[in-house]
Length: 275
Image (cartoon, rainbow, N blue to C red; front, side):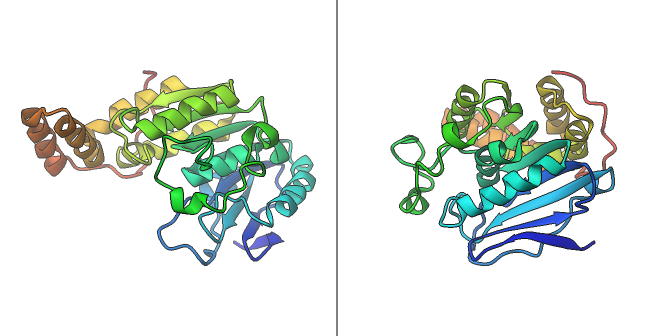
């Protein structure tokens, strides 16, 4: 499937698949270990096979999409968005921030933001020291979600409440976007969707976005069902137990992590109950 390059910068790139469809799914590149090059764009067929166009936005560097080309990309997105009757988005970590940052330009109706940040500016998020090197060149005004986000944005923010920085970002996102619902997926890690993926429930999460409404209670129920077969869940809970000095419990979690077999996105589990 070929894409149309709708923005082709040195720092930012946006590719559109099936642009003739009237509904749009937007994805954002997440933070990567070795930045410096763009990836070949790939369509998310869970959406393109069901009547959605797919727009994928990348940043060459881990700069949270805030650079000398941000405003030019934003102008292109503002011109593009009116061609679609509905726009939804999903983003992981830096990609979640990207979904927030461009939600106003794209007029995003629903979002699934997975362990997103609301900024990397030290003066705004002094509790989060993970991205200090990248924050040195960050333009806090250009990246300000109160100026550039859509106040009426709906959807969910997924986070692991045992990861204090991720939980704090999630709570701050709710203050900025009051219609977002918070999904506390204990033991999910970063990203907390890993447990859903290992349990085979990732397609269920995509389906909610596809069909128009994301239910926080349903996603929490999916997580509860998925964690029974998630090595990642038991490994994260082992670390939590060790931090609290509960070594016997940590050993039990370690034993489960070594024996459970993940389902891993078979799509068989689509009936998770509300939590």
